Length: 150
Length: 150
Length: 150
Length: 150
Image (cartoon, rainbow over all chains, first blue to last red):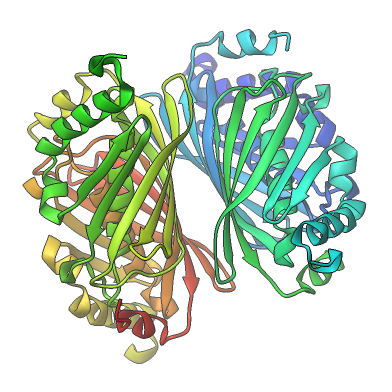
C-alpha cells in the first residue's frame, strides 16, 4: 500500500491541516496525540479558567474535549459535522487534572456515523462517556458558513 | 410572600453567588441575563478563539453555553449536578455571532430533573437544542471535589 | 383556507392512512386521539404482556408509545423517519395504567426535526420524557424497505 | 472459585429468575442467548404485528429488544433500573428479520452504569446502536411499584 492510499497517513495529514486552522485547540492547549482511520486520542489540562461556579471543571469543557476528539476521528470520512451528541458525566474533574479522550468509530451507514469517546484522567480514572452522531456533508459546506457575515 | 421565600429572589441570589465563583463564565464573557425558578437566560459572543478546524463556532462552546444556562436554571433546586445531556446541532454558528440560550425545567421527580435549553442567534435563528438531566446531590458534594489534589 | 390546504386536515388524513397500515398500533390497542401540524396525542393501556422481569411496565413499551406519537406528529412533514431518540424514565408505570403521550415539534431545519414527547398516566403523573430527531427521506423510501425479502 | 462466587454463574441464575417473570419476553418470543458479568445477548424475530404504518419494523420494538438486553446485562449489579437511554436507528428492519442484540457494560461509577447495545440482523448487518444509563436502586424498589393499584 502506498502512503497516499494508507488511511492512517491520510487521516494524519487531514488532522494536521484541520489543526492548523483550529483556534480552539491551540487556545486551550489541546494536543492531538493520535489519529488513525476512525480513531483519535486528544489531551487537555484543566486550567483555572475552566472551573465552573461549583469550583470543579466545567462540564462544557469535558464535552468540548470529547467533541474535538470525535471530529479528528472523523477526518478520514471526508467532510463531516457533528449532528448530535450525548454525554454522561460519571465523575467531576478538578483544576489541574490532565484529561485524555479516546474516540473510536462504532458504526457507519450511508452518511451517518456513530462514534464513542471516553474521557479519562491521565491515571485512567473514567470521567465521562460521550457518543456522537456524524453526518457527511458536501466539501464546501463549512466554507459557505465560515464566511457568512452575521 | 416575603423576599426570602420568593423563589425568583432566591434563584437570583444563588445565581449571583455561583457567578462570583464561575471563572469559565467570566473568562468567556458569558452573561446571565435572567434567572427564575427552573429558568435562566444566558448570552455569549462567539470569538475568534472559539472557531474549530472548519472555521465555524466549535460545537463544544455551543454545548458549554447551553450547559451553563442549564446549571443556572437549576440553582433553585439546591445543589445539583448535570448527570447527562444530549444536544442536536441544527445550524452552524459563526465567529461574531451573539448567542442566547434559554433554559427551562420540563419535569422533576425525586432527585432527577429534566431541562430543555434552546440556543439561538440574537436574531432568533435556532442553532441548537439541548436536553439535560440533573441530579440532586448533598450540599458538600462540590466542596469535596473542588479541593481534591490530583 | 380550503380543507385541502389546512395543515390540520392534511395531518389527520395522513395519520388515518398511516394508521390503516399500522399493525403495531392496532395490535397493542394504541389510539391516536389528536393529530395536528407537528402535534399528536396517543393513548395506550399497559396490559399483562407488557410487564418486564421486575413486574412493572417494560420501558420498551413506554418508548414505543412515545415513538409512535412522535411519528404521527411528523406526518405533516411528508415522509420522515426517526433517526435517533433519547428517553428519560422518571417513574415506573404499572400493569393497568392508561398512558397518554403528547408529541410536539420543537425545531426544524432542512431535513432535520426535533420533537418532544411527554408520557403521563391518565391522572397527569409524569412517567417519561422523550426527545426524537426526525429526518426527511424520499417518498418511496419505506416502500423499498418494506418489500425487501430478508 | 466456587460456582456461588462466579459472576457468570450468578448472572445466569438471576437472568433465569428474571426471565421467569418476564411476560414481555415470553410474549414476543425474545430469547436470552447469553448472560455474563455486564454482558448479554438476546434474539427476537420481527413479526407481522411489529410493523409500523410505513410497513417496516416499528422502532419501538428495536428499542425494546435493546433495552431488554441491557437489563439482562445489568443483573449481576443487583437491582437496577434504566434511567435514560439513547438510540440511533441506522437501517430499517423488515418483517421476518431475526435480530440479535449484544449488550456490554462500558463504565460504572457509584450507582450509575453505562451500557452499549448493538442490534444487528442475523447476517451481521447493523440496525441500531443503543446506549443506556442504569441506576442502582434498593432491592424492594420494584416490588413496591409492581403492587401499586393504579
